[in-house]
Length: 210
Image (tube, rainbow, N blue to C red):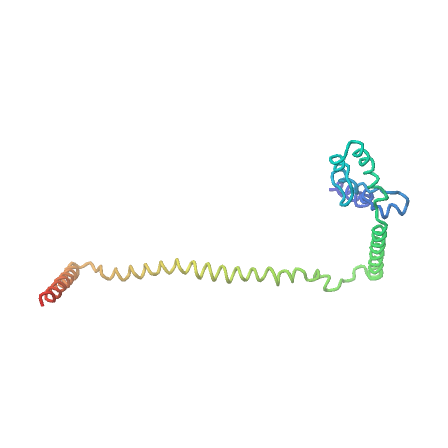
């Protein structure tokens, strides 16, 4: 891991100079040295400005060549808006000042007591984890456990399956009481059934005759 860390340290220290903004480099007379600023300029046209590719399709060859020769100038120092440069420099100065103020406050607070305990809110990481767990994780967990699992899965789905099973058990118990295993009981049931059928025909036969 030593070599990757050394490479990252070097890039963190001087790597930003490859893309130093024009607003900063122009203050020291370096011009536009931002290597990232014009990487995609050959394939992306700026809004409101003619591009050499578009000019080649709409004009003749001499006009296209003139537009192509004028295209680099459009990306030079004249293309930078002074108002934007001024705003960028102001924001850069403000950023540096705020960073220096933070360093100064840290030095004043921890120079004499480097092991001074941080405020409780900082030790708790602004209570982001507590807020996230309290308002997002815990409600979802409670809904999943109490509503979806115990309410729907155990109460509804398992209730239907277990209810059908209990119904069939009770129905089997009721029918099982008829299977006593005695021939006399079966003969008596058949006799009662035959008498019921005969009585049915006698009743409706007399009703038709009468």
